[in-house]
Amino acid sequence: MPQVLLSRIAMARSGDKGEGSNVGVIARSDAAYRFLRDHLTAEVVQRHMAGINRGGVVRYEADNLRVLNFLLEDSLGGGGSASLKTDAQGKTHGLALLRLKLDVPEDVLESTVEGTVEGAVGEGAEA
Amino acid sequence: MKDTVRIANGQGFWGDSILGPIRLLREGPIDYLTLDYLAEVTMSIMQKQKSRDPSKGYATDFVRLIDRILPDLQRTGTRVVANAGGVNPKACMQAVLEVCRRHGASGVQVAIVEGDDILEKLDDLLAAGETFTNMDTGEPLSSVRDRVTSANVYLGAFPIAEALDRGAQIVITGRGTDPGLVIGPMIHEFGWKADDHDLLAAGTVAGHIVECGAQCTGGNYTDWRTIPDLAMIGYPIIEMAPEGTFVITKHPGTGGRVDQRTVTHQLAYEMGDPAAYITPDVVADFTSARLEENGRDRLRIHGVRGLPPTPTYKVSMSYSDGWKAVGQLTISGPDALEKARLCSEIVWQRLAYDGFEYAPEERLVEFLGANVCHAGIEIPGMGTPSEIVLRMGVRGPDRAAVDRFGSELVPLVTSGPPGVTGFAGGRPKATEIIGYWPALMSKERVSTRVTVTES
Image (cartoon, rainbow over all chains, first blue to last red; front, top):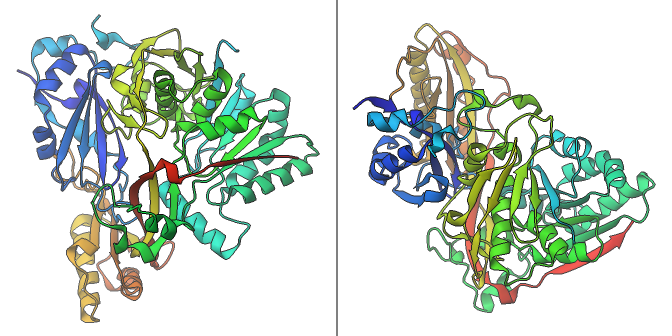
């Protein structure tokens, strides 16, 4: 199975949520979403983000949006304005998660187009 | 009743580009322009301004914007809904009326929504049985009560609709939910009722999508190279229909892109449990929304379901939580990272000599350029940085100790290793930390008030 970065099959956005942050992972295709729902668990995310997040990780699913939503419970170095960190709002946590290396089956990769070309809209939807 | 109403959001946060609202008014038709100015920290800053000067405590940026766009508003008839009132909506309204007078614009109806500010009533509410227990930590309010600097309820959309029903062209609110700014016009236009849960949920989803401005039209987007003309990015417009289906779009010819991917990015922003997005008016189920692309830069959304609202309002309080100072220096190569590490150790050692030590959780060192943002994650191909920004900070309850730290950073320029520069801005000073205290309170104990005044 080829090893790829999560960014090959998903996009992400993150932001602050109290003393933690949320990372919404948006699968690029239905096949990618099915694969990630099984393999991108809260434990996997917790391990990958351990240098950023000191707390637990909770996962929610939104099948209609192909989104897995992760709450990193203690990732900002304090809530409100207490943080001393540069990224006190978790703006970069989505890109941090997209650096995760994953072994992804060929068929998932084949049916998942990376959206690097203007006009590639919706191609990942795989009918 | 209109077939659709066009509601645009021109301001995602206090400090967003003024070009958002200006271009929304000039480059195509809109019925409503909404503007968001408030964050948790903002309310505390505004309370401080108001305590020094009773005519302050609102978003003065908004008044400057009205000064600039009033002719456009009069030409197009566009109505404005903004939470620019902060902790002093009345003073904000007076300032807007003054702008109208200066422009010779008579007959402009300006409304304010009040009732969100409960700071003065806090002790009465505690006596009446409200506990204001911290929603995140479970701590009782008594642990910070004497340090509370602002307390506001997140109001819903119905008072905004009332202001519009009464003819207001400009509606100024204090604290409310961000989606409420766009739902108010929908309630006003279509006569939605408090038990129209699916309709209010649809408005909530629409409001969440546009509340951060250009973050749903291609800003902050993973595949950023695919987004055309970010410089002239268009701000979002909702085309809402009476039955709760809507299209997210932007003016033709503007930069950016609206499609399933850009909008889904924003749907995932600041998301908690997607099946239960709680507002004062409804509990919206984001997992019920159906998205379909409907032409260039048009995304149609339908099928949104909602559940009845909870019996409580969310309360946002801020309190004084100590002091912090952060400063930075730039350290050039060779050996930038090694020298930056030495510099940080020197600072702590000199402070310790003078009797100032900071606990590990009260201090921070960052070597910017050596993977701070993605700490602990391997970055393939990352070589040795040719220069480093050394960023150091401390925090704590003792202002003097925090200030003392600030005076040991700049001396490294002459008493550290070579190549230390970038000390512009001088010595970092202690600034107050504003703590955030989220709580709930019974809706019955909050009353709202709408006042309309004509210029």
